[in-house]
Amino acid sequence: MDYLIKLFKYRNAGVKEYWFVDPEKNRITVYNFMHDTIEEYAFGDIVSVGIYEDFLIKVSDM
Image (tube, rainbow, N blue to C red; front, side, top):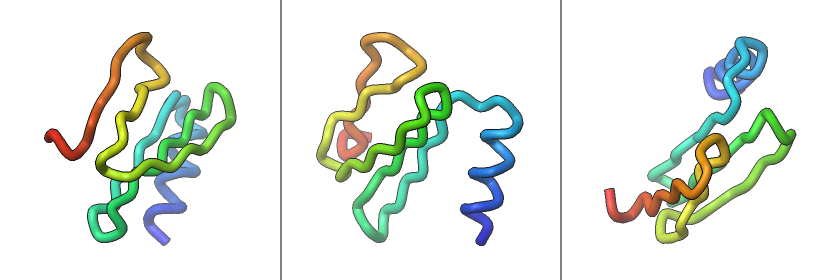
């Protein structure tokens, strides 16, 4: 429930991109509010940060 409330509040507050990192499911969900897209990644994937050009993150390296 908290997850959905935060998603709604962040979008309405003008946040451009919201990442939900779920270590139990080995999954990253990226909500890009600027482009109205949702993308899912595994921890081993390289994820492009949508609000910064050429900025990539590999969560498993953190």
